Length: 342
Image (cartoon, rainbow, N blue to C red; front, top):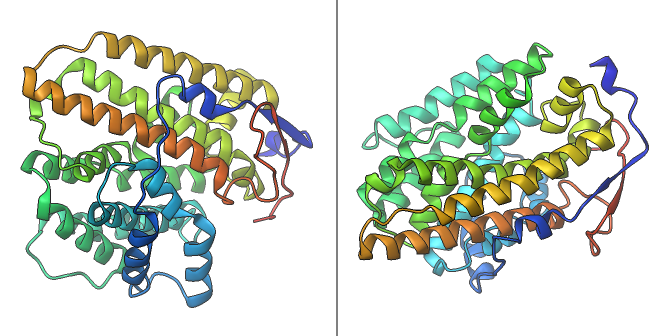
């Protein structure tokens, strides 16, 4: 898009971990190395990338750190599955974000349909399509210890279909409205899948009635936004370098007719307000009985751990801040990457 071609040489970013840290605690899982060895062994047997790309994906992404920060209380076996989930999610996401299918919605849809069949036919044989094969393995492990409700929530999580929408927007050079993009990003970041993985990571047992409650739904939207909006802020530099304008910062620039720094400031303030929203919703939690309430508190604490671990990982992963010193994240100066730098 022509109006986005002329951007300032740098921008400033507040410490987003300090904003989400007002309500989300940071902790680290001690089983990181053990889970990483096992998950890598599994991933290297999947024909997703050639050897060079596979090495870059595994070593550059720091997904083991991501899992350790995001699932601090999972045991080694469950953390391994959570790391496998990241390998599947990010390699699949790269198909529509930066791979050959970035602007090919029909190809993304075809892959999505194969993966959906894994959900709808769980007793069928393992698919040949590598992304569906990974999903098949994940669901097999998930069913091993999860409750029926957690598994059904995993199945119902409509994550890949929003990748199709995002790919179609790219192919049509279409800029969605801010409200439309927020709704779409709640799905593309895999919010519902993340929540199911949080349940699985601790083998929590929560009845459906909890997730049907309007306060819990509002809290779910809030925590998903707390993960998603920092992602758009931190990944903006990489995406503008790739010529990818499907980012909330660009949506704000377009809709409100403002420059880059003002759009970043607006989104940062939106994030602050979203933390306030979450605090308000949490104060309004209903009671579901002593036993369920205890499980719900474990779930919410684990979800908050996930949010904070995720936001910190955005800074620590070289996917987004290549060559930028993020030691001091307060008013971070971020030089704009040149086009095609990635």
